[in-house]
Image (cartoon, rainbow, N blue to C red; front, side, top):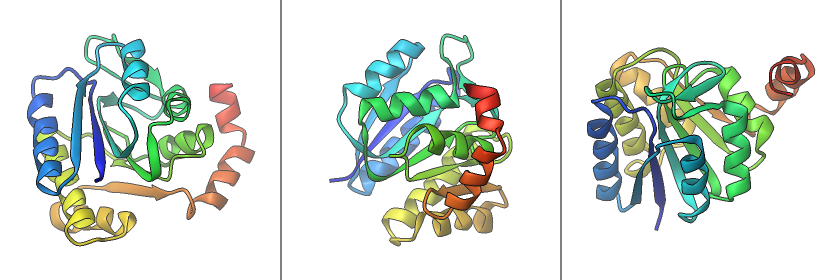
Length: 195
């Protein structure tokens, strides 16, 4: 049975509706859903290391190109740190998909940073712009529908979001992004920012 870990780290009033909707939809598709409220950076690390392995990890948070966090700032983490913690926790099954329900979660910079710091991350999916919780629920719901009911490739499933909603989401496949990632690393950007 597939599993999804839903991390509620944003703290907004709409977040429970968005995340509960993703949880219920996942259950309809026969995916075991584990939904966790994230109270702090330490809490996130504990959740990642104590709940088994997952096929999907859904992160609900405020986000930007460099980091994500909660409204109360108790959760505040650089993408590089998150990637390192994911790897250390061993919580991802092969071909695990990170679903970043964060503004700017679909930026190339975010995906490449996650790939760079954890070689076990296979796919990164997220919006390229700011969206509401309702938008996130609809768009990620379409992605899950295409993945689970239609057995679509993750990159194609992401393209279906734009076809249905006109919202710009990106899905990065580690295998397809290898050359771009190497160019990104050689540019020195990651070293300058994170090391």
